[in-house]
Length: 615
Image (spheres, helix red, strand yellow):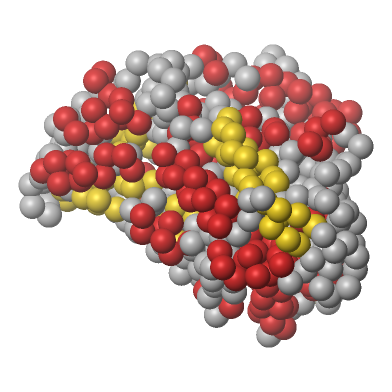
């Protein structure tokens, strides 16, 4: 259930020119028009700008952690292959049953039985998207669970005791205990992806089994593993994406007709698409770019991009872009941002385990000022793991309020009142021990407030934020040693570890993107802060937090929000991480005659089937 880190982090390598800008090879006379007419046009080609050096790289929905990215999930795969349930309603962070392949699930047997009724949509080959397709997905997932990026031991699919198709369109799951219907729907059923039986084979030449074939490959563990091996191999052959018959069987609104290994993807409408609305555009094209500047050069020419973005560094050019026929639309997604601390670091882990230290560090982050100055107003403070934007039914007043407002002076007082003394320019523990006025358990006499922090390179705003953090820390007697690395380097650097491992030398990290809640859409925390969770980078461990997290998974009805409130309020005050502002995922620029794009998805989906041109 590990969510992907948000897309704005991908620009960390934007200065490296590996690809030629592709926008010059594609044009649409309608895409940059500034006409004020509202006459709807059927057809036309819309061109979407990919983030720099972030092309689609994987087409098979059962992705491993190595292939998982928001680009693959929400800007590529979902156009062709739909998850059982769709999320996002008019820009709000909630489930969208009208756009889903199935009706709302029915929970019974004290929430231990889940019954799903599919709507009977069609695959492009004419077959029905049915319960057997869900059995196929579950068989592959069960047999290859460690290959699934969202897998956490004990959770989905481990918490499913059995599953079966009880009718052509009815799928029933038996769970290992009673769960909250909201949590299970948002975080577990969200992982279901019906797969066409045309894929249930172990080689290209193998026959396609029927829905009632008792010898279908996926019906045994060994067979399901062989099927996965075949499909994964096909998915690594990027040059064949548009020609391999496997990927032409789709249930989404779009079908891929052309794909380059550089990332240019051309889609046409799936004429058998059962959902609504049907695509109005005649073609949809995703364009790769080598850098922010390459994309901006094409965008500002007003000829080849229908839906692009304005790099933050080019905000002064907003009026110029508007004159080329674009409308400015900042894009917020359901996420929060933070700096993880390594509680298992053998040198400073004991220091981080002291709540007063984390409070002091949080008081060095001037979130409102960072938003207004470094993010140019296009961001939102993060005060807990539950986001406050876009609008959602989950956050409460505590998550909207700074629990530890910016104050280097108070941060310094917190340290001196707990056994620390300024020696030279750095706070040093002079009163070790566990009393209220001492440094705390595990902190040794003579230890210094001297920390290393590695952050993402290539993002001006993050560099400015970390420099401000370093400066504020110095006022409180805390020394922050900064270093940079590309996004992937920061992620690998800050992995969870045990104190004896050499890799546990990291202390603080900032990959710039925090956490986005998708495809686990309910902000309950088990993937991030439960003890032993794979994405619990800093190895945070609180028995209280573990209990509160567990309650969010089982509380139902009116108690569900109470359980979530108890969790988010504790995490806002207990500070498992250092919270920092969440930037808008991108500053979108949309051609004035392209409609249906806004409100943009809170989960980063793009839905060109909603788009249309006017003249």
